[in-house]
Image (cartoon, rainbow, N blue to C red; front, top):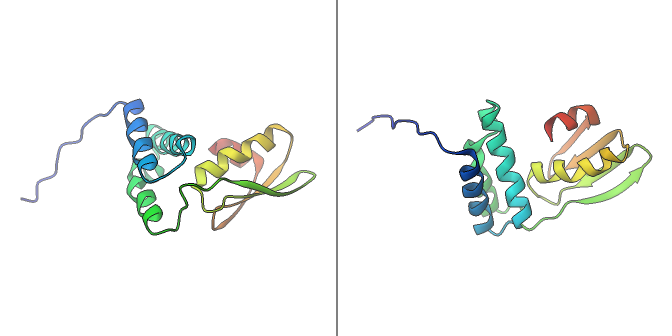
Length: 130
């Protein structure tokens, strides 16, 4: 009939649990599913809907299409002084970003994070996004 449905308010923790359950149902490691769900809900809570729950279907589609590996575990490929490389192995970006935060706490200054596309940023920028 072309009518627009009325928006409904949903408890953030319930939405995190729902999204995490969807990711787990597609084979994602439970801890990674929770991380990804928390990040997309957090984005909406901050008013950044472009990176929020509206990406849920995109993540599910990329799992279905094989572009995102739900069982992927990020790895450190090499570390030299203040530089390190995180190979995401096609994991969700927020999982790789969380993984790299350990090295920032250890004093690294620059990260190269690859989840399929290369991203380089100073640690001060990445700390704001984790």
